Length: 313
Image 1: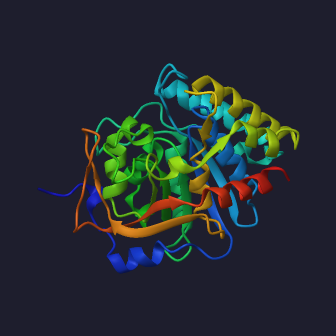
Image 2: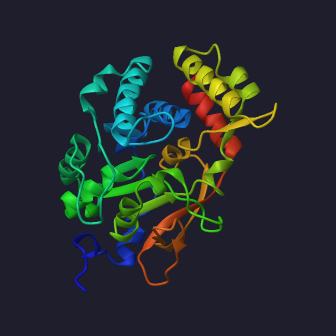
């Protein structure tokens, strides 16, 4: 059977290994985010823009999502787009508003047909300005539809980007029914199968350890500035709403995807052969597929301290 276009010309492991090293110096990034879905996206976007000495934001893409906070994937994407603009105002970064793009209105119907959107078109074009030696870093913290669509539109970008994706559960977790990948399994299969340099941050079992409590939100965020007040107030409301006991913590896992690109010792990772996302929400393992970088632990206290320090500025 002829391979799909995104399965062709996969780099050898030596090439991938070189491109999966943490970058030195300042790098260009784009962020793909379902910002209205959970409070963690808002923390992640804020943390990203507070690390300008290392990360230069080139564009922000609104990702689709569909749950109790949206009427459809399109509605979720549009609400995320509006939330990005709100946060940019709080961050004093209105200059980035022209580089915020609406993403996919629905998920992939199959593994061969892209979902056209301003975000996918921008990534498919923008990435061509970069090289293997100087790639564009794509931080993705929602359904991977926009990124997979850009790869389908222009497979050549695989040699010019590195994707850092928070999606899927840990390999030891009983299932892979995680929100980001479960929304669009076809897009996940493209991402893990196309040979693009990929850093995976699994949700349950790994970055689910990155939590914050109400006392910490009150002690370290409230009263610092308008941005911290906004983030902490919303996080406390959401934490109380979803709490199962009087003492609770709220996971803010999306921050970890930004942290992987920073110089601090915040995460532990290793190389492994790319697994295969299955449509029954499990992983299939492989000892022959190309390598990806897999994050397996978070140094929670170190990362939270850095997040507090950067956001209270």
